[in-house]
Length: 85
Image (cartoon, rainbow, N blue to C red; front, side):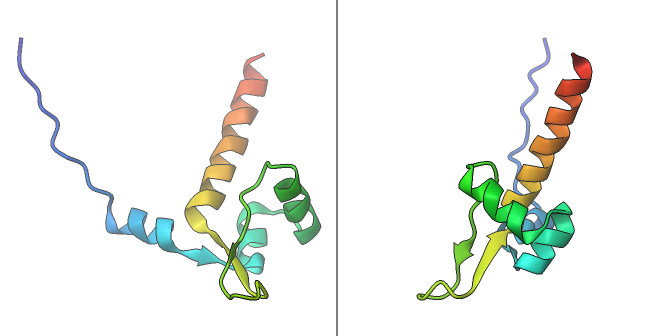
């Protein structure tokens, strides 16, 4: 049997950039096709990632792009699961 050792995988620069990129509300709305009211309702229901305060007062918030992308992946996955029933 051949011994196959996988090389260590490191996140690509694009992946790191996605993980560390902030999206403002308008970008988050555009990326998800959701409106402001629905985004905040989903946050309240625990179904959407909460924003990160960028100022002490919390007057400016943003979402991590990686978390928004995870939400989108869950939506796609749940669609696939609904179709399989």
